[in-house]
Image (cartoon, rainbow, N blue to C red; front, side, top):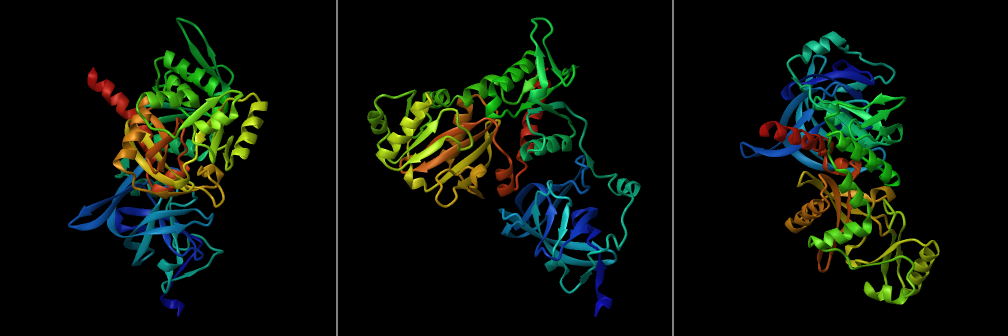
Length: 460
C-alpha cells in the first residue's frame, strides 16, 4: 500500500506553483491537523464576483528582503487554536502543493509565522492517503543549495535600500520590538536596536551628542521609534528629546509620550478636546473619602494608582466599605489616586484601537479572565477581532490627536451612555493585536515613517 505514497522526513522542501512560490521549507507535522503558511499584509478582496485574499510572504527563513506577492481564492475563515492555547481567526485558501514529483490540492490557513522556525507547516489533513512520514529523516526529496535558492528567487521583489532607523527600547527579545525590527528590514531599511540604558548624552548648544556602549556616537539616524517602558519614562523621553535636538524624526515625540504617561494630565487634555471618559475623581490623600466615593456615583468603583501600568495598581472596590479600605491603604502610601465609576455593563470587556498616523489600522476586543475585571492581555485577557463603530473610530482618532501621538493604543469601553475612553498608550504592544487580526501593524508603523520622509521630499 505504501508504493503509491510519498515518503517524507520531518522537514522537506516543497513548492506552490499557483502562488508563484518556487520552493519553501516545511515542517512535516502529523500531530497538527491543518496546514499553515506564513503570510503578512493579508487582505480579502473580490475578484470575478468571488472572494479572494491577497498576502505577502518572505519564503526564505531569516531573509526579510525577499518578498512574494500572492493571491488565492478564499474558501473559509476559521478559529485556530495553537499548541500554546492562543486562539486566532485565520483565512483559509486552497492551492496545489508540489512535493517531489507529486502534486495535489491542499487547504492552508494564513498566519504570521515570524516567531516560528518554519515558513510552512504541513498538517495531517493535507497528507492523508498520500504521505508516509519517517520522523527520523530530513529532506528525503532533496534540498536546494544557497546558490540555487538565489537563482530561484532572483526575479522576486527586493526591498529597496532605505532609511537608517533606530528602535529606542529596553528588551530586544520582546515580540513587539522584534516585529518592528523585522518589518523595517523587510522594507529595506537599516534597523538598529538602541538599548535605552546604554545610551548617554552630551548637552551642548552647538554639538549635542548621544553616545552608546563605550563611546560610539549615535548620529546620522533618519528616524527613531521610541518604545519606552513606564518605569524609565523620564530618561527615555530625555533621550528622545536629545534625538529631536539632533533633527532626527521621532515617530512619537518626547512631549507627546511625557503627557500620555501622566494619567491625570492626559485625562484633562482629553476632556478639553471633548472626549468622553468615565466619571473620575482625583486626590492625593483625601480626608473626605465619603465625598470622593459619592463623586463617581458610589460603589462599585475603580481605584487606580496614578503611576500604575498594564492593569497593575488598579482595584475594583465592590462595596463602599471596600472602597474606603482601599483608598485609606493608598492614602498611607501618600500616593496619588484616581477614583473612577465602574461600568458594569461592559462585562469585563474593552476595545483596543491601534491608531497610526491618524487612522485606526486595527481593533480588537479584549476580554478579562473569569472573575477578573481588567481585560489586559498581560493579565491573561483574551483578544478577538471586532468591528468598531464609526463613533468609536472617531473617539480613538480624536484622542490620539489630542495627545499629539503618531502611534497609540486607545482603550475604549462600551457603556449604557455610549463609548467612553479609558486610556491612551504611547507604546502599545503588538502581539495580541497582530495575532488576532493577522495584520502587519509593525509594517504600518514603518510606513508612517516613510510617509513623513516622502512628504519632506515632495515639499522640496
